[in-house]
Amino acid sequence: MIRNAYSDLLYIGDALSARDLKLIYDHKLVAVVDLAADEAPATLGRDIIYCRFPLHDDGSNDEAMVSASIQCLHSLLQCSFRTLVACSAGMSRSPLVGAGAVSLLTGDSLQDCLHLITTDAPHDVSPSLLFTVDRVCSRLTSQ
Image (cartoon, one colour):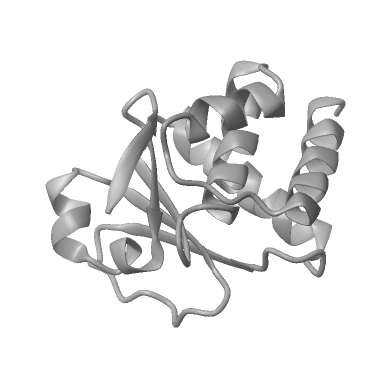
């Protein structure tokens, strides 16, 4: 299952959705950003952009990896590529990285973007990952 999270460009989903070619093609998605560290990499069609950043919900992520995932998604959205960002359940890493990318895109605060993405949607945001994403976004916006 996936859902439109921002402007018909950013979709949030789970690991199963990121590996479902029919779903990806039905939604006319161009790219998949896979954040599921505990899942095997997806095997997608040759015409699908696939970027994998194996992140965890705990505080063990390298900030450079978190930063790269946010910047990659931001770049895809900036190019108007319809993109699915997915993690194991689609409730923590996906909305956080999505909110970070939208924040960079719009100039709105991370908290406002996270609220926009998670309103009326299941979510279980990891506080330690939120702290890391917030720190990364603050650094990226000040550059």
